[in-house]
Image 1 (cartoon, rainbow, N blue to C red):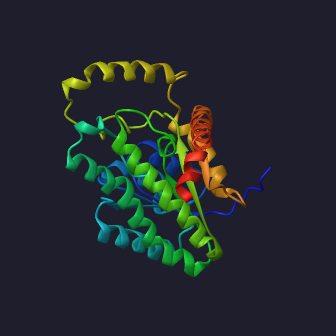
Image 2: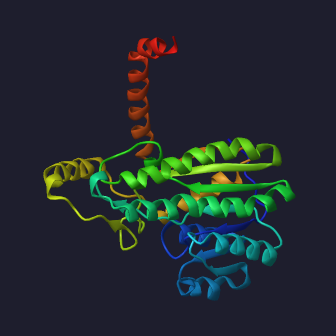
Length: 280
């Protein structure tokens, strides 16, 4: 069993108005940690300020604003005198088949889910390097390693997040900085709710859309996970002496990953002769 650290930590968490960001903020505050909690509307954090006082610093932030990201991280560092855990949680789901997506649909998805995480990460790294420690948590998804119809833009954003974060983990390890990609399955967050965006549907896809909706309902199985319960798993990851690069949340992701990667390996192996043909 991995040894658990119990020293209080200082967190910077984006997207704290609801869902994972809010639940993880509460869990950290409940155990005596300090949290710089960002949200587009900080009034959603008023109850946390009332309950936890100076332990929580609410910061208004739209993560697509690069300058604001750097200012928010600097504000949190100056206020608390350091940062231990940086959580890039802000994001949303863009729905629509690839042909249905507008340029704005795709760009907006990337701006929030990829560039927002990139800017916050870049803003935090100088502080973490200077202190010789820190942990960056990138909230990805099972959709960061697999893919399903109707959320291609979302998958593109999470696969991009996975790629730059795996590179980042290797680049900053010698500075004492750890990186973990949190990969949830389906959870009862606002990901597909009011904050989601849906492209204008093309009638040509109505039949295939209905078929995939039925398949998705079957995959749902026992139903979505509980964001509140997820906090214990996240705390376990950030307290670990040797945290993982990737960590699933929920029961479904492992089976999805195993099937997907088995299929990929089988295809690569079946076409290895063709790969060698290309080598010359």
